[in-house]
Length: 271
Ligand code: PEP
Ligand code: MN
Image 1: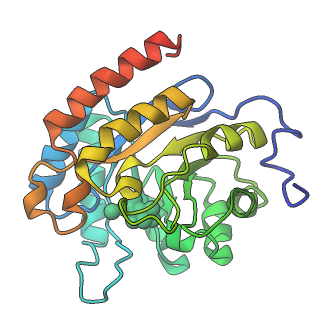
Image 2: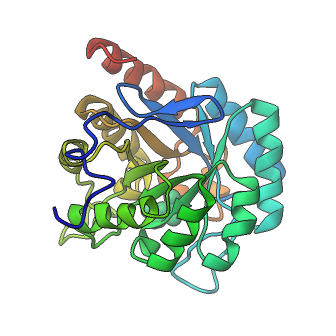
């Protein structure tokens, strides 16, 4: 792939390990990143954070800026949400990831978050990729829902060319003719990308499957196939969630799934 230089494994055979506040992501390790899709209130975020922390998640997720299909849907708590996330980081000693939607918000989100997420809709927003690249902060780059693996890696190259090697790739499903899942999880993309690139690869079983009962089986598949981690929606009261309640795991379900993943990793001799 000629468009790939900095992110290509050919030019950099060793795995990149992205370390965020002492949490190392990449190599043989497996890191669970979990929390609600969106921060809705302090209580909701703290309840989620406490549960995922107790179950073994090392990174907290929770968005303050939400990309919604309808302009009338909940758009996020913005800076107030980032402040709540920063409080939870101190309380539970977990770094957090939050999405940044717009180049004008990069400075604000980067002043709070440990990992900046580029969502599927923005994977090919090249000016946004350059802005997050310039911050030097870790960036989670989701695969565009219509992007090929080559296009996704070329998007990562945009971040890397700004001098930022701290990139985590997230397979979150692609749009296909199949309607039984929200998106089709391209599980084969995990070994394909791990071969083509030295960057860590994370699987999002929530936005791909789109249904609670699919999250655990897809997460087990991610662990078995060699992903470097998962990004999972967990909500203490999914029936009241403002965003994506149907795909959120309950805290107990998340804890049970983490036990299964631990056994899979152990069987494979992984940390
Ligand atoms: C999310 O992780 O909350 C999200 C919006 O995901 P995606 O960009 O993959 O749809
Ligand atoms: Mn979501």
